[in-house]
Amino acid sequence: MGNTMKTVKTIPEINNTHWQTGHRSEFLAVLDDYPTPDISQPIFQVGEKLRVISDEGGWWRARSLTTGLENYIPEKYVAKVYHGWLFEGLGRQKAEELLLLPNTKAGSFMIRNSETTKGLYSLSVRHVHVKHYRIFRLPNNWYYISPRQTFQCLEDLVNHYSEVADGLCCILTTPCLTQHTISSDTTDLEPPVVMRNKTFTWKDKQRSKENDDEIEDMLAMEDSGISYGLRNSITSYLALTREDHSYMSNRKKKTQSVIYRSKYKSQLPFMYHED
Image (cartoon, rainbow, N blue to C red; front, top):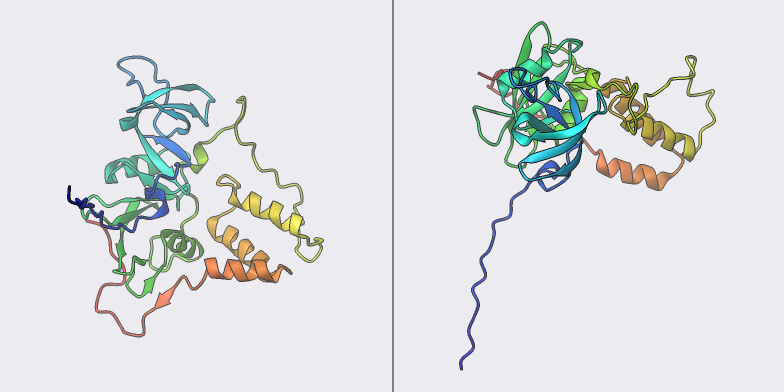
């Protein structure tokens, strides 16, 4: 018998971002009351944040971060949320409903998939009304809203517009639904952050790696009550002043140059609003 050569099917390489490669979402956002009020009293209400317990194939078993209640909910009733602000599985209209919920502050925001252009994202921000900005992607996978500034990743884009509005309707303050987590009278939920020292100053604080690690853990909490811009300013300060130079070197590699300013004047408008 002669040797037979097996044909191997080659799968094209797709440059997915890390939230598209099987990483678990931080939480689920409820998009509609479930069940609907005409059927029975809702178990989960629109705007609630759920912690996933298990995937039951078309259904999620989840626990509410608002009430502590645990139950099942169909996957079509929820959106997966990554980084606290990247919402997967909802459109423009539903984004507006979530951003206009009571207790949602001006500057609350989310990033979602664009409905009008496949493969692109949109930034939705609550101000007087909800504004939508299309996020474009360059061939090298960098992102931009205004063509005069590009960002290596969406997180860098969020960090920048948390510091300055730079053409947006307002500065980004908190991710959508941040105000919708209540941990009182519940068990096994994340405790609130308590700021004990109102007169905190850096120069009066004894610096150590343990202290820095505790501060960084606090900054990583989405409900810490500190704006994204301030979080990143403090994190940058820690990185620059840490005595461990190897740590500084590694951090610089991870957070290298996030803003690119073109030396050519673009003919495109300063800011893109979604249709």
